Image 1: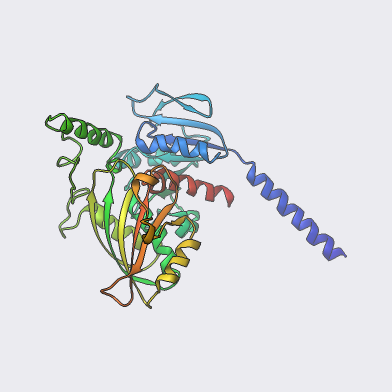
Image 2: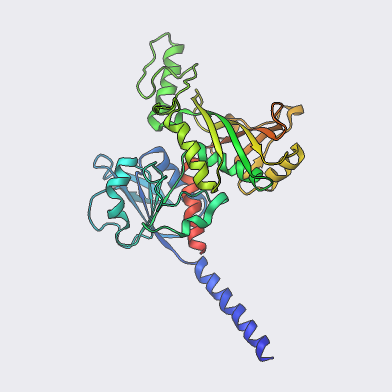
Length: 357
């Protein structure tokens, strides 16, 4: 009876601890509020009813003083400075570019705040975890510098889908072609695409500023700068980040293409596994996978498309089929909103995971 009473008490204590965890309210900061990802962070935090007590917004000197609405309250943006403004902040979502992340990392973290960084500044640093919660959430617990990196948007989308297959049989090779929306280059890029379309309809010369060439009615087979090996930085991010997140020696060959779509990236993916995987196995794995939704009914012309899936949270998968060139190969198509899963949502999911620990 004493043992039984002890077990009951332990369960009660555990329940109380869990209840306390649920009602913990966090002090949250967003750095780079005016950008596309910063704006999406506000939406995601509100939609998911994130348990926060205070929300502090930071921006450049140009953005300082601007107000944004959050849960019916107007919050004024503070200028990001090297001071003690982050004292008392539990988690800071940082999306203001790599230069700002590097310059202010110590200021943000020196009083104990966890910095969840959306830039590429720290992704490949050995002492900074690179996290996609559906794949390697536990990596977020080992953060010597109190910095956690968000992966590149194309990588985040890719690895959520790859995990489902890798759990069946280790993946050895990945070939991927990405079709990346204008919004991946920021809010100004979306405006430029919209303006180009209007100008061309009116017979005017299109404005070209954010991209190397006219994007409207065109494809640009370059995202980011080229490296010495002929791949762009974006393509090499997919190679390096996939291996780090999945803790696997997976070889990734990517071709990244900018397309005249406003929002949501698409990827055509070919994988090779150690053993052959059937289409039925793969479909079942995708259907059970965390963060994945299957839309795959070719007979009825049902498959993921960015037009339908902008503003949605999951990674959508369709066109699942065998690779005709490789007995151990599979091919599939994926669409995901890169501002959500590729940036803001992934960052908030990391924070939600940390709160539960």
